[in-house]
Image (cartoon, rainbow, N blue to C red; front, side, top):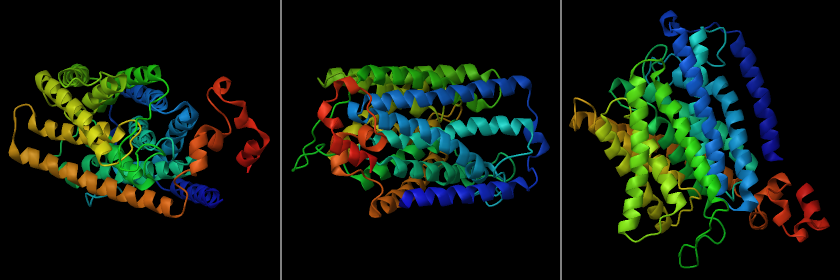
Length: 445
């Protein structure tokens, strides 16, 4: 009831704000909208590719979850992009890309309207990025997070947490510039701005939530909770890989010859991430598993995202291979710390994203291993952690304190598909006792 009242009040407030902004004049500067039709077409196609990545996230995360929770995971991925798109248009885009004279936050462009044609293309593409940042947390927090609380947190991440850091690194679209951008921070397509921001939010979420029931024993010994469909995991990995060509290539914001190098570096880094993880598993006599291979490719993709346009292919391979190892080791570190990340999102997006951002500075073409550039990169990585993790932890902790964040133990045992959505993904495999009269009455209440 509390979240329902909050949602109603938030909807009324947002409607009022949208009406208020509709009376404000357009703010686009003339030269910001001068683009060729081919540029618009390329950015629109790239935006569609990035949107398709949501399907990859949904398949991968649901596949790594148990069958009793896979609808809940899919619903989170399906709906967070919807509410995220609306709130990013309403608030987030202005905070991130509006006039930024202070270097800290945008002050215009809220509820964008009466703008130049190119501004709408740019908004569409950036909306897909915002949705990606928000959905990263859903997989890490799967199987024990209540649906309304997750959606509320997703709105805050999309509308506030992600855009504010983005304004520091990328906030020079209209006028002014972010303070990190002014220092020369390199993050071409968002290893830190998008992926580390989402990954640090995921870390805050799993700390506030605590592990799933049965994930760790009384002495902290980890117990494996296997996902229910590794085919989904592999298919989701392929879709994400495919969408990444739009994620990185579209960040040129124009159809030019640089796209070839960007996409090639993307492919090489992902391949190197898988190869390095497989080699490490072979040498250490560890099982060579589907999740390890898929997360190796994703870590390579996350790692190269910052420097895909500014390094030579050989360094892209080094970046992807090392990012794969960073993610592989990071997952095991989190388990040792008693932190339960269902899909490995923190290691893949936060750790590999931070590492890839440092590699973008170290392997910058023409200025290899320049200490001053690497120092700026380190500062940007640290600033992202302090802001994203700190703000997200306060958000998730507040939801936990008021009792809205974590599902009841009984609901967690039965599965969130049934208790949160009153449906199951595989009804033919569910025991009939789960549908008895008392259980259905509890669900309806």
